[in-house]
Image (cartoon, rainbow, N blue to C red; front, side, top):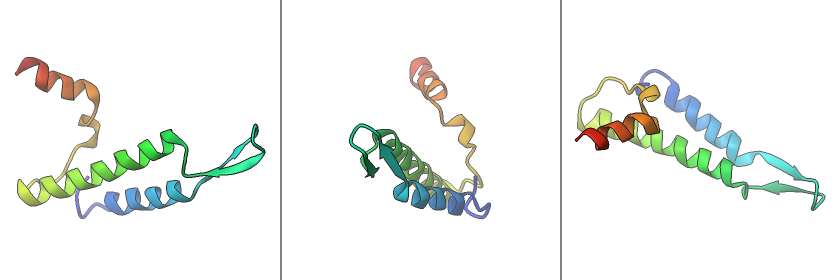
Length: 82
């Protein structure tokens, strides 16, 4: 992922889509908008990835960010072995 790759625009469009998605609550017999916790968590994660990429590219002159390395296992190893 880099600032020129188009991934940021793709993630922003997904955030927009997730923000407008509606779910049907069978028990309440109505549509539910913006109070599904997993969707809100997904939006926060996407925003964090965008901000992290922008910050690292600007402050540390990185050319790209390998998002597959942004998982809990790799982060645990950093703190466990240091």
